[in-house]
Amino acid sequence: MSRELGDVIPAPVEVRPDAAARFTLDADTAIGAALEARKVAAYLAGILRPATGFDLPVTDGPAAIVLRLDPSLGEEEYRLEITDGGVALTGGAPAGLFRGVQTLRQLLPAEIFATVPQAVRWTLPGGTIADRPRFAYRGAMLDVARHFFTVAEVKSHLDTLAQFKINHLHLHLTDDQGWRIEIESWPKLTAISGGDGTGVDGAGPGFYTRDDYAEIVAYAASRFIVIVPEIDMPGHVNAAQVAYPELTADGVAPPQRTDVEVGYSSLVAGKEETYTFVDDVLREVAALTPGPWLHIGGDEAQATTAEDYRTFIQRVLPLVAKYGKSPVGWHEMAAADLPPTAVTQFWRIEATDDDTARAVAGGGKVIMSPADRTYLDMKYADDSPLGLDWAGLLDVGKAYEWDPAERLPGVGEQALLGVEAPLWSETLRSLTDVQTMTFPRLPAIAEIGWSPRGSRDWESFRRRLAAYGPRWTFQGVAFHRSPEVPWA
Ligand SMILES: CC1=[NH+][C@H]2[C@@H](O1)O[C@H](CO)[C@@H](O)[C@@H]2O
Image (cartoon, rainbow, N blue to C red; front, side):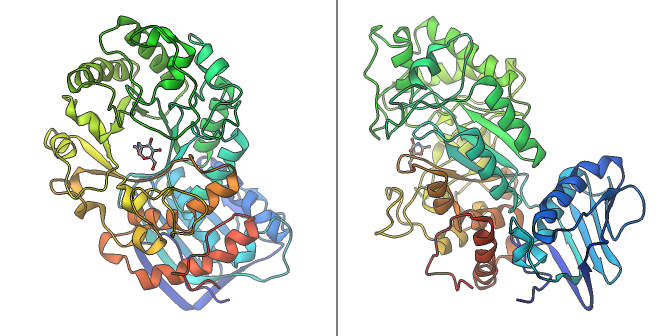
């Protein structure tokens, strides 16, 4: 199948094909990179070797494929030139090179995603691509509290997200059913609520030790993806209260929960133990998180009075800053007085939202995650075996045909930090389930987050998506064969 230079997801900003040029990799091809580009060059060689069977040495000498940095470009900006003589990839920083490598890989035959040598000609179409992202924050969220996913599963998920230039993975680490990150100063959080029988399926145990979490963070960083940890509060805390009853109003441990109800648990805004707990947890998670963000949740606090909610949020926000991080929270957080550094994540389906508009009026940025367009846990169709449907059915066309700058009155382009596609795991039991719900809808959100607002075109996208199907198959990645896409 011939590949056009523009057959890339997300769609690049500028594509100038040169039909007279093409470049074919062969056994003599080397990858040239100066020291600061060496890591990405090694990554590129690593992803090309299995299917080509070529050595693809990385050298600082002459080479047919050359990676270089040009600091005059934006950090994630890149320029890709393919001629008869070879390939030149220039990035504003290593992250830009890494995004350009994802484009380069998509321009090779689909077999490049195979894990064993394939007998194909590794020909690239000629021309130039100049590319850079629309939004700085292009995220996916994985709920590891309702169903736990191992370090290996999260790493695999990161590799599938990186192909679409996603640069943040938000891990929903705590909820009513499970606590999934070890906190040394409060060990029973994982000993009990990361233990046997935890999760919506009661399938626990499952939690990340400090070393596990550090391993995930490091792997994500090697894909230029920032981990955003979420400690959800003051609601969604039953798991913490099972482990530490002193966090409840009456000091009595509530029963462990494996159902999917929400809105029944709350930390106690009037107890000092609450803030000792929160301070310890945020201190330890911040120390393990190199990225700038700490997500403090804030959603569905129906068991917290409006006054207590504001009191709690306004006491917790300074703790995030104390540990050198910037706070993110679900948009209800904006019921409290927020510092301009706070980012609100809009997740509802209503046409307007006063909390979010108030946050923006105060100078805050917004991550757009409207459930009816971005929630990857929504069923594709009525008969979908996985997923929920409270925000309606969501197939890939509906996930593609919207714009975050037009979603909420008072929240325009300048107020947006970016977009994120959350995947809640009440109905998920495996990495295959995660992949099936993620693909092909995540690429739609990725294109909204990366490509120029005016360039989006559903007919072009569904054709490019159809060509991606074989790439998922060669990788062994599950995906939903949506009837809206003319799959190859
Ligand atoms: C931010 C938010 N809080 C709720 C809501 O989204 O819906 C999810 C299911 O779609 C659910 O798991 C989550 O606890």
